[in-house]
Image (cartoon, rainbow, N blue to C red; front, side, top):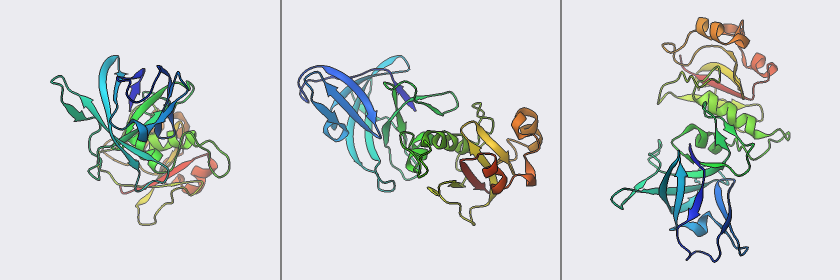
Length: 258
């Protein structure tokens, strides 16, 4: 995820007046001008933006915006970044389907990849090749609520930690690129597939609540988990079942092959 501290339309052709506010509304931009005009992502296609990312000013262009073919209500943007020679290059690397796309997401990323939405003015760019965008596309919309009115921000953060196999939630991922996992949750937004491998773990917004087996045995062991994560003491191995995970407050569940 790329944090945007400042955004400014580099031209005046798209609207009159100066920019009053820029925010992420779901997965689209919403730009409000001083004259009251409001533009959203589809109306900003072709506009050059000046953004500050990690303290560096760069030129960003929205090349295309379209509805996500696999996730309802999500808008996918194709972004280009201005190069030193004046040319343009895709901002996002290709995802598993070969698409280079992303979207704005309200909030600010913590070091472990979870999202802090306490500052309503902050937003970032999430690329579909990254875990944050994947969790949004799975249906864990951090701005929405689940069927039981529970905020999905916690499920989103649990999903991020689960995809990274960050059992402690301390920015120590223990997975490997390309590792296949199967995902479910307590609301059936996603459902576990019986052929998706053995039950691995249950997750909340702080990390794993119990772990049946580490995803990559070379990266983690039961002994390391229990020694390094106090709340997992006695909660690894066969003791960890989907039923126990749910009792312990897990929001997300996953299967993986050992």
